[in-house]
Length: 107
Image (cartoon, rainbow, N blue to C red):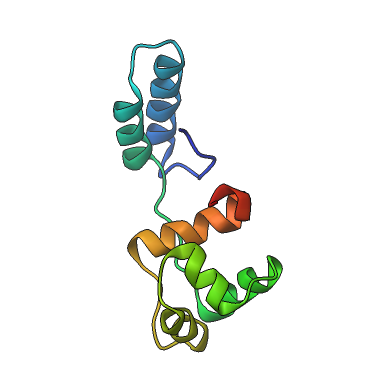
């Protein structure tokens, strides 16, 4: 539920900490806690071509396997790695999860 991403500010950090405690005690349900996560935590950072290639190589994945894991096309991964396109939306979040949690976090 809660992630280890850096909060946007000290106020958001306090709000998120309180919401986490209330969730743990059963006063806030999972859906509401996800809303607090989205509100309080900093957005996912952008990924550049070098970072994507390094991430792929760190997990010893081919471009086609990374594309399958992220449910995107092979040409998209190629364009990311040469800098023609940049990941956004769900793909960006999945790359961030891959970096933080590893391949097991996505599979």
